[in-house]
Amino acid sequence: MSARQIFSLAVRLQGLYFVYHGLTLLPGLFASEDMRVTFMALISATFYLACAWWLLVGGPLPAFFKRRDLTDLAYRDEAGGNV
Image (cartoon, rainbow, N blue to C red; front, side):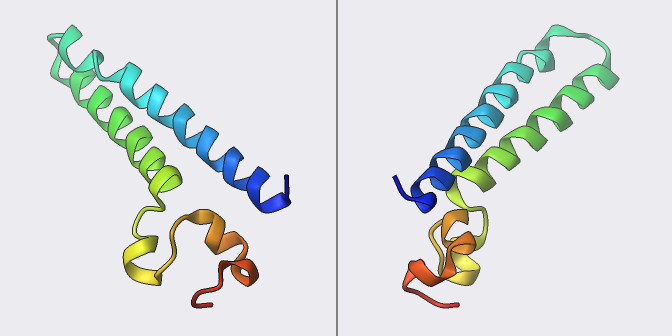
């Protein structure tokens, strides 16, 4: 495995870790009747799922910079696209 493949695997695993934590916080939205607890669960779940989206999909990178994911940003020379 090359360094690029190892980095891509690490980014994907970290993204899955954030998806897991985001999804485990979603039941907290319905478990409490206190609006503050529900709001904090919503904010936390949104943060984790946004980070997961950034790590797995690349966030806005594909649209703005014509890159597929964070691996292309880290390894610009091998990407074969825009620099």
